[in-house]
Structures are given as structure tokens and as C-alpha cells.
Image (cartoon, rainbow, N blue to C red; front, top):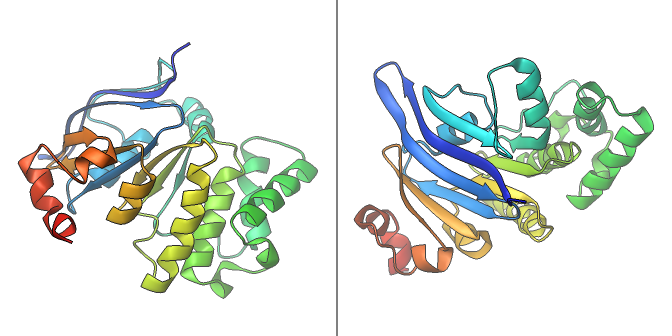
Length: 246
């Protein structure tokens, strides 16, 4: 049985006449931690949004366990229950408590009993250090705490793959570390993760593969030991120049 979870074949995405993604081909294997880096506007977040079917690709295919993910809402909902996403802006419901935020999707999408939804929520809130805040509303939390709740909520769905779209970009610098720490621990569990990030040290230390995107292309796809010490592509070297100099 193949360990390929997601296959992306000849994927392109345009907004009007602006081509954001250009013929992306990649495979995501079970247990991989893939960090995607690159300049602003290189297509990183759009690629992630296409993988999660939040954007409809202009051409090409996305396959989950060799089955194409069609643009039928029922199929998309089922797919998203297995391929979850953590957003840079948290996307929590402000009128709900931390606990209610974490129970909502499992009740509405997976239709699991209330007791099981509660148990899952508590388990994953403990995992990210947010169990003491179950009765708090998002407005009472710091940015780092909100993001940890968002991660717990995604984990409650028992996803096979978890996507992270710049999960620390909306945080104050002192809160970045607490979220990265949670993600580092998650990486040790065997969960397959695709992470768009500008945290180069995190990508170097945590990823099993690092992808550098440039102008909508995958310019380089390599083990972090290679990409961060001896990048082959001139644009990768240019992008990482300041980091490599340090």
C-alpha cells in the first residue's frame, strides 16, 4: 500500500490574468513534515488553500489516497475532515467559549456524541496547554493562546494531514515561541504536516522536507540539511542569503 497521502499534479491557479501557481507537481507522504518557504507573493498560501479546497485550481488535480478530490461540497467536507487547516488569523468563533469552539466541528461535521466531543476537546486542549481556559471567550485570550486553541480544534477532527498557513505571522514576537513549541511537539507524534512559514530556524529544525517557492513555481524541494546549507537554485541562495550568512 502506497504511503502517498496527497498527490498534486500539474496544478495551476490564476486570478484573472495573474498566474499565481504554475504547474505544481508534488507528493505528500505519511508522516512527512513539509515546510514551504519563499518571498511574499510566491504562491505559498494559495497552494495551501488549493490543497484544502478553499480555492479552486484553474487546472491540474489534487488526489487524496489516489482519488481525485472533486468540487462537490459533500466530498470537500469529507476531505477537509481528514485534511485540516490552521489559519494565521485563528478563525475562532468569538461568541463561543474555548471548549465550545473545539466541540463544534466534531458535533456538526462528524456527528459524534456530545460526551466524546467533550473528551476529545479536553484531551487536545491539554495537549496544547489550554485546558485551564475552557470557559474563556477568544477576546479574553492572547494571540498565542488563540492559535493554540485553533490547533486543538483542528486536532479534535483527528486529521490525517494538518495544514498550517503562516501560523505565527499574526502574533507578537514574544508569542511566536509558544506556538512553535506546540508545533514541534506535534511533529514528534507522526502527524503529517504541511507548514507555510517564514520561521527559517523552525523549518530547518523540524521539517523532513523544505520547499522553496518562487513566482508560483516549486523552485527547490530538498531535505532541510541540503536546502539550508547548500541550496542548488540561485533564487533559493538569494532568498536564504541573510540566513546563510548568519
